Amino acid sequence: MNKNYYAVIMAGGIGSRFWPVSRTKLPKQFIDMLGTGKTLIQTTYERFLKIVPEANIFVATNESYADLVREQLPKLSQQQLILEPIMRNTAPCIAYASHKIQQLNPDATMVIAPADHLILETDTFVGDVTKGLKCAASYDWLITLGIKPARPDTGYGYIQYGKTATVPGFKKVKTFTEKPNLELAKTFLQSGDFLWNAGIFIWSAKSIIKAFDKYQTEMGDVFREGTEVYNSDREAKFISGAFVRCVNISIDFAIMEKADNVYVLPSDFGWSDLGTWSSVYELAEKDYLGNASSSSDNVIVYDSSNCMVHTPENKLVIVKGLHNFIVVQSDDTLMICPKDQEQGVKQIVADVKEKFGNKYV
Image 1 (cartoon, rainbow, N blue to C red):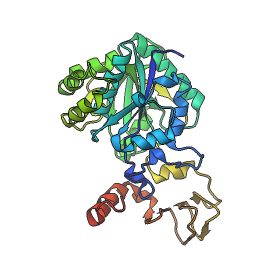
Image 2 (image 1 turned 90 degrees about the vertical axis):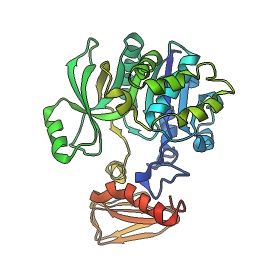
Image 3 (image 1 turned 60 degrees about the vertical axis):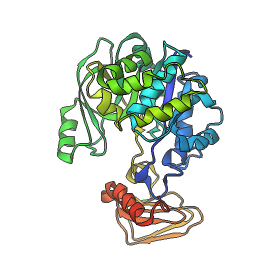
């Protein structure tokens, strides 16, 4: 494997849309959401072992999840943990990771990916990421992987591409659009030049740091100050002060929507961001009436259809007369919600926190 290739797995999110199973103390990336016997971060880590050297896989997460990462990925060294003192979205996380890795290897080229996505066709994914890494090592490009849309989904961001780049397969990015309404999503699908934004990025450390210097000057300056302390015992103290000085902003808003050297590689490797209970429902085995459950042994369904039922193994759940509902139970919480209203789960979590504090979140 190429010693200049690196992977950064972002694993700092809370996964509130998977409440009440995903909680602040145990977010979805550390849970076996699909019943495979492995957590989402473990599966993501194993995919990258096929692409980059084991020592070149880094995990970026909040300090409070450091022990969870070590427990689930015991082969990671302390140096491979990129620990964020506070949550500041993806831009500061990526700026930190890029400077840290460049200090280790000035010729580094890296892929950045979330810890909690599903990828069904691993070989295709490996091929596309490898193709992107090779390209990013040769060109001053900021590359993203775009997924060919299967439906007019309003839960994803979209990437519009233009002319074919000098490297076959890659397209010049024209626009980024955040989650559109249904009518706009249908228009995107019909136009044929839009892709889903998978949040998977590939670039050289040099290129992304240069982009921060140009488009996020203050943030770029903050992390450049740490050049002498990265990968030393002084790093944690420096980062504790650096993150406080950073704005809370995503890499899409901070860099990708501003830069003029952004390219997309259209991809199709069985991708899902596993962002909602409905996304799990779509992947699950169903009975003849479209009902899916996390455990067929302790769920009994009567006169119901197209329901998603997720329950602990020690709980018996009876569902009768429900259609198109999500029924999710954890040890201390039960949520029953129409599938078409699940985008409101984040607000539910906020309301629960306001009424009960952190007890149930």
